[in-house]
Length: 506
Image (cartoon, rainbow, N blue to C red; front, side, top):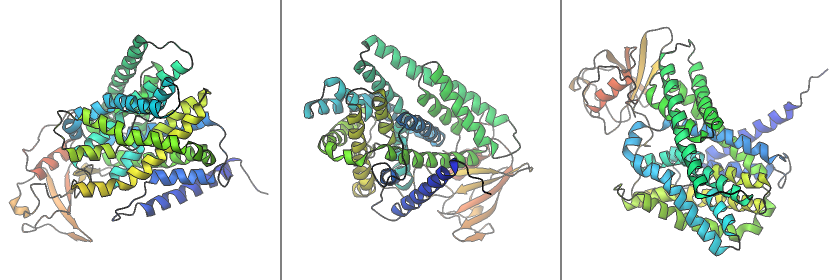
């Protein structure tokens, strides 16, 4: 007697694919190597290898399902991007980041579409649609590269803001041009109304739901630490769903909800971020594997020449032009502008958008999908593998990733005490000083110092070195991380509860 379920083989196949993809990507992105193959490229390659046109091990014949699953994966990635976007990044690079996410997308789409129309034998509206599809950078690919590339703080902030917020404009342009191709009457007034509803509606819903969710997460007692990340995910889903129901951009809403939760909920931050980073990584792997399964490699050589032309216009003309125009007045050095331009990887977002005309059945939809997929391959292969050498060559490499936090609270269950981790970096005021030379920190105590493999018991003459991890015990207070961070930076102590103030360790 044996119990067999139809899903058994699917679970095994997915597990084997994930196992191989993750280990292969980890080996290819080994730290210390100047040539790192982006995981996105490997995941796409594995999907193509086991698909219909490869080994034929897995068959995917429902492009609509792949599109819908791709949208879900993008939502997880965008929500995690909002959670990890630092309020200080917004203050540092809000203007160029937001401009690139809006005006920059329009410029990129326009220049690329013009290039496609001049170089290829296609109708102007088809060229415009293709330009719109490839206009936005990909949050999954960009965030993944940022984790292993030591970028300057401002460059990292610009890329994070842009990649997290530029999808709605690309979606808006794609839907508008697709409606025109299908014979709908889309005038300037229709474009304006659509844009306003998408952006302003998404901002309104995301702000309201995210603010209410942050208030709830700061006050609710769930009893189990693992439930807080689930509640945060539910809040993000509500933000997307409500925005979509009123015709607004759910992408903007879920990103903004994540941004507010990440900035206004200092407690449970470690569990929330750890959970959603794992979810975003799993979504990224699954998304690229799925999209690889949807592609027929045998069709790619036929579109190689036009796709290379599109990629050349996009990477070498449209993207630099958008970065240069959107950086006017930002005082960003040309070297950093070059890094921002080169780091604008295309990935899952353009491929998912390319499924829209593909599944709509319009003339040339299949061609658009194949060209866009080839463009993404070129972008990830060329830009992704050369970004780190470019950063080093231009002399803008930093010693520590800009996204790394300074401090994090680790709540202890059933005890009214927090254990706070503080990562000592060169720029902190306490670095290089002995403990007795550092001002006293009220209501907190340095309990241990982790230095490499050793754990030191702190004394007055113990010198704090960059790379140390201080473990502090403190009374359970909502502003404990803000106070510890201010103490480490030599700033005035913060005695009052932040009451909605952005998380201070960022």
